[in-house]
Image (tube, rainbow, N blue to C red; front, side):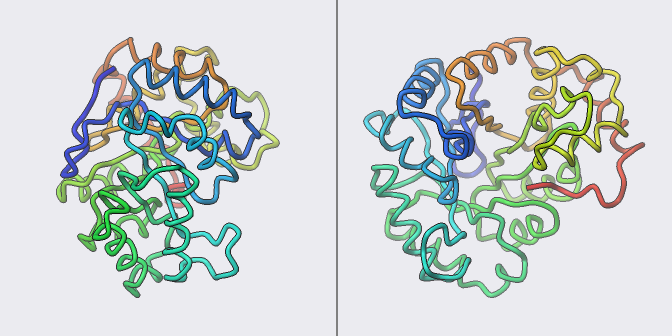
Length: 298
């Protein structure tokens, strides 16, 4: 699998990474996760991302692949209370959350800790950034990052404090391509894309019941890309290849609890880079149809 140097961090990351939300929120068993992650690692994946608020995702990752810690880069996120009797973004909460994540993941350090959806208002106070910087100084993380969207992400990048950015980019979510990513590239940040296949929202004939998928479904109705009128797996591959073709993007994380899904996603990338004309057509259609309120989505 293709690898890219993750900005100024120097990490040599696989272009396809694993997102750990689904295994926590959808009740994956340890057996499923063990099979899924070991198979993915054996096949070339080396980026595993999770967060303190993804139910038992961190524990599942620690239980199943901690013994292979040298085979992958481990990213997690902090910011939400998630069981602590402290308010979100409290500096004490962040310190305790980071230590808990290390215990859950059964490791002494992670490669990147991202602040999770922190607002510009909170970032401006500086305390949350200082907590992450102290964690880096103590060796609990190699690098620090920000995970979020819209103008909050732009402000985070402009602080100059972060090594890494996690942001939404896909066929239905392109604000960051012009608003944030040029600034991130200029500052040498590693960039990981979340939601790169837009939840495969075009597979629904009618508005989906799952609220998380609704915004992208609604946008795609208006975008009406001719390339995505089919619902087959090749369109999933095209969407994933679009996200990876965006300048400044290094890796894209896809979540699943299906042990077979990893190999399918990896196989879809074997088609190679998205043709320039296809990428340009998708971008041009977005610029024609996107409304001003189509901001980056969590």
